[in-house]
Length: 310
Ligand SMILES: [Zn+2]
Image 1 (cartoon, rainbow, N blue to C red):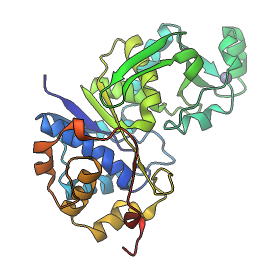
Image 2 (cartoon, rainbow, N blue to C red):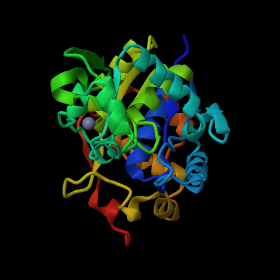
Image 3 (cartoon, rainbow, N blue to C red):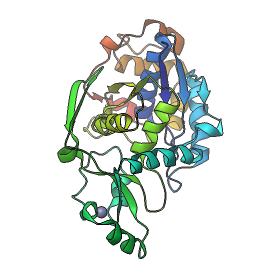
């Protein structure tokens, strides 16, 4: 069966070097195998996401020669247009008695940071009777959590190796729908990866701790889970993770300093695919791509890269 990967950007700002590193590895892995890619726009949060960022991101990927085969401009691949699928999954979980309304106010903040591994605080709402919940719902709109079992979910990441998590103690009941109606990241990615036939997920290893939750959702929803490959993060010389606030490393700045081939050469060197950062095309890299050469540990980028005067 042909491998199918995905780009799943959140259009909350310009793509930066760290995002690009993950996207490049996802693309190389699939293209090396002759597989296909879908580009899905993860714009669940109407406050943080703007369509203009998605258009810019697609243009940046095209500039680099990182092509996709499905999705992208198609409205059906934007999460903001896919709520009916998440609602159906939510109903399926509810029919199994796995959801409950939560009236705690912290849930919104928890939901805003899917990249951070946070154990949900023990939520008293899990113990509310249906009558009590109905009474509380008259006063405020609840969010919804999914009730996790005391079960250890384990899997083998293709790069990071074996990983296991006890959902009840290491994760806790997690939010799947916000009180304002927005769907949670964890539910949406599972539904989308299954619906889009994704067989391989390549993403930053900051999301490793989300994976057991997602595998469990695949299982209870009767869906087929993809293979996971969690790649290293790029770090600044002082050890902090590169983020969208490092404007000197966003695609606007990078495109002023480098040609596509020069930028790919730099990233290919970081990814262990060549001995130097000499310029290279995406196609040439795809032909010789080798996962065995990709480092597992986070990568500290050269200080010169962060220096706008360089
Ligand atoms: Zn609660």
